[in-house]
Picture 1 (cartoon, rainbow, N blue to C red):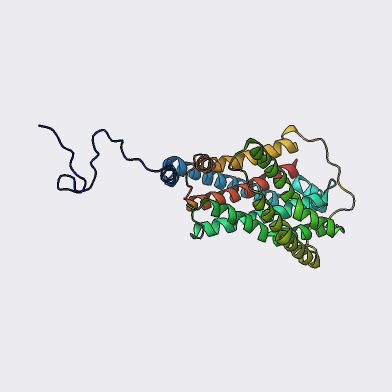
Picture 2: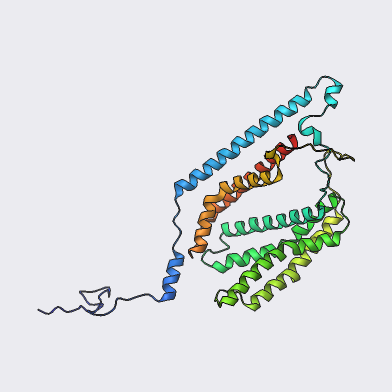
Length: 329
């Protein structure tokens, strides 16, 4: 007997799943398939993630205990000095206690500008993470997170101007207008040059992902229309404040620094101070980069907030340790 294909919706095929003989199987449109692929969550090996964070927390605890014991021992040694000659004899990190708040010789303005920009980026990151953790930024809206980052960076310009002005005033700087302009333009200019270079390459290749001219104009308007005035306002209030009160008096004559060992060289200190915090967050950074390049959605902002706190604690402890070794040597 000749077989017949049941009609969709009939008793033999109540769900309409039959396909006529010789017909092509049903396929989803290209846009639907892309949307389905982008909605697919990124697989995460949870045991490796937890192991990394446990090891990072153990590392932070060990470093904190070692530093507390070392500093307590140094302070006890200084307090147990019997004679006046021993008390006046400086050793260890007490040798440079009158020079730690001295203005840098190279460029106090550059240090204050970078410090103010760092405060701005940190405030932007914390605000973005808080909004994402509370559910205000949907991971499915890929452009929403980037838009929030840009807007929050622009609105945090007042923090950059305020702290850059306070630090520059501590160093005895007088050119407050130059400090304000550099704070508002230095970091955004570097990012803008890199972004324009990449965008021109995309335009030259005829890629559809190139940023249109109207978007570029909107970004420039945000920069000069909102960020720059906010930096000016923050800088104004920062210079109106009193100078930071430092706990020790800065010596008039700077102390001569002897030849240092190889492991106290600034390049080695910079490399070591960057590798250790990177090791604490490299696993989570791998998942973020994989989600970006594989067109998938990164949605675990709770884990990302934990990683951010671990990164902050790691950077703080590494800074204390490196400063201690630099001062003791």
